[in-house]
Image 1 (cartoon, rainbow, N blue to C red):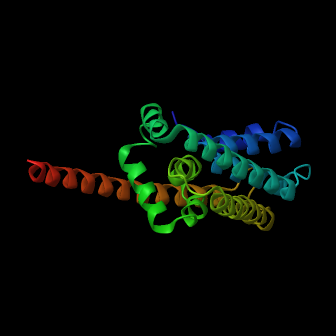
Image 2 (image 1 turned 120 degrees about the horizontal axis):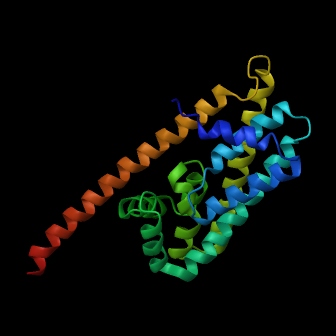
Image 3 (image 1 turned 90 degrees about the horizontal axis):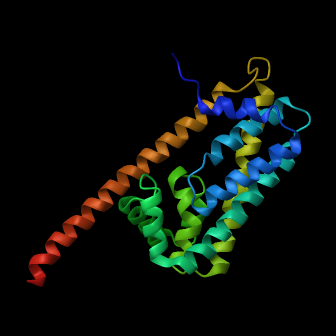
Amino acid sequence: MEREEPALHVQEWLDTVPAVAVYAVVALVIGVESLGIPLPGEIVLVSAALLSSQHSGINPVVLGACASLGAVVGDSIGYAIGRKGGRPLLAWLAKRFPRHFSEGHVATAERSFEKWGMWAVFFGRFIALLRIFAGPLAGVLRMPYWKFLTANLLGGVVWAGGTTAVIYYVGVVAESWLKKFSWVGLAAAVVIGVASMLVVRRKAKKATQEKEAAEREAVPAAE
């Protein structure tokens, strides 16, 4: 028995609810994901954007605005929680979501922040695993809020608005052969998401190995 793609169920479900509910769901899912809770924010946004290209009741501009609002507000709340919770928060998240908040992933994210500073928040918005780290980790690392907010606003608007616009126009241009959902749009989102996840995981594994090697070297030196 073949399994259907979750993304297809998302779009089918969104097609059954009012436009206001679609806006609310997109903002909520993206906002909660930005808090640090692993949710399929990008899949929901892509599905809703495709739906807006075929459904006159869903305004892509309002959709993009709601997605941007969810991203910015969610990241800001995540920043506040991370700033208050500190390192113990990361340890708690690692226990609850070991696949996403493993020691290697956290180490990779920290290195990105050390290298790029506030722009790690901006670019992190475009990478699946880093997207859930940006807000909480910026708070844990005590990044000045004005820097975080600047990168957060830019990243949220460019990512959410840009994704909505691109997928919407793909749906409009290819409407004749993209019936209920866009295989092209979904395939592109999946490929980009998987590729970014593999890159992050590879870097996380390398960071973990480097940390373990450094710890092994430090033990003889201490003796």
